[in-house]
Amino acid sequence: LKIREKTVKMQIGFSTNEAQANHIVLSGEKPLKLSEVDIIPPDKIFGLITIKDELRINFAIEISHIKENESANAF
Image (tube, rainbow, N blue to C red; front, side, top):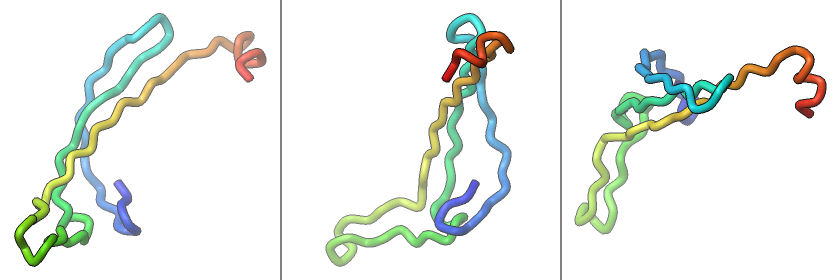
């Protein structure tokens, strides 16, 4: 994972779901501390409002299988 020029190696779990024929969706989430990527949570209005040192990354990646004879017509 790369955030603001800081690269952090991590394992991220995911689940799979077959949305349609020939389509698979990988989805998951990863909690992360802002301090892990060298981001200091800001204080707002002299500390009256604070931001937690937490970030939650949610993702969904759709993978489609296109047959060779269909790939020429895909574009």
